[in-house]
Length: 149
Image (cartoon, rainbow, N blue to C red; front, side):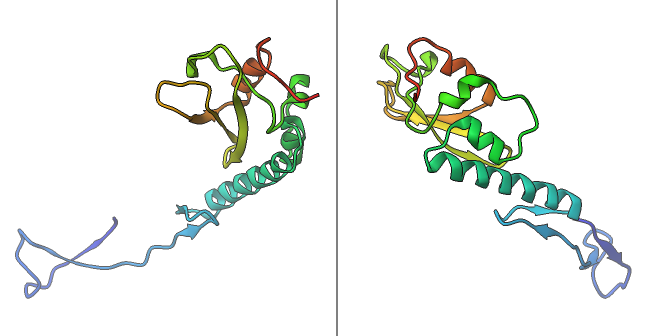
């Protein structure tokens, strides 16, 4: 925290200096995060809103490709993502103990992080974690994954 030192001797000794408070301006986004610059806060808020748009499409039964388009994705979308919805069952071998697909896309968060989860016999029970879109493509292309038609 930035501070200014007061030199009034009645305040304290050199070992215990006195400080006067200063005004600090911060910018708060809808998720409660605080930023020192308005530019950083605006960028973060835009990322939240993109994830909200993508999440709404996913929750309403749209594909991951539809979700990415709703979020304004400017990159080329892999065609396999047209078949991945919240009902898809993905095979993520390093998460599961059984040889069957069972993990589904659940929601998007700020930064377009995608939560995927399910219960396919993991030693610790149901499991979920964030995956990148590139990893999602890899999991969707696994022949054992069951995608929407």
